[in-house]
Length: 126
Length: 129
Image (cartoon, rainbow over all chains, first blue to last red; front, side):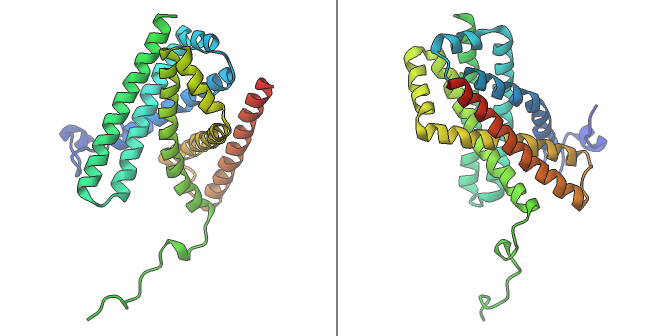
C-alpha cells in the first residue's frame, strides 16, 4: 500500500527530486515510535535507581534487547529526519546548512550504530 | 530612495500566543530536545556495555540535582511530543481540522503530557524511596 502519487512513483522523482520519501519516512517512523517510546519509558522507569547487574541483565533479556535495537534504529532515524527539516527551515547560509546536515547525519548514524553494538555486547556477554 | 521607512507586514510578536501556535512551535522544540534524549539513551547503553565504573559515572550524572531536573524536562518533552505527534498523525489522515476540535485536541495533549509526566515521576520517586 502506498499513498504516493502514481506518476511520482513511476518516475521516482518529485520537484525536489525526492518525491514524498522524506515525509513518508517521518510518518512511518513516528507510528513505530508510539509503542516503542511507551515501552522504553516503562523500561527506564522500572530500572530507575537499580544497580549495575540488574540493569545489565534486564537489557540482556531477549525481548528487551530486540525492542531496544528497534527503538534506537527508529528513534535515531526519526531524529535525524526531524533535525534535517529544522536546519533546512532556519539556516539560510548555504555552506553552514549543508555542513550541519552532513554533521547531523554522520553523528546519528555513528552513535546509533554504537548504541546497537552496545546492546549486542550486553546481550551476548551477559 | 529608502526602503527602510516602508511598512512591514505584521510579524510574530504582534500576535497574542494561542494554543495552536504555541503547541506548533513546542512540537519542534520538544523534537530537538528528544533528539538529545536519544543521544543520552545511547550514552546509557554504551556505559552499561563498558562496565560498572562507566555506568556508575553515568548514574552519578543522571542522579545529581541538575541531572534530575534535566530528566524531568526530558520526560515532559518526550510525553508532549508523543501525544502531540499522535495529534499530527490524525491530522495527516485529514481529520480533526475544524477549530473547536483543534482547540480540544490541543488542550487534551497538554493535559495528557502533564498527567503522564507526573505519573512517571511519581513511579520513579516512589520506587526509589
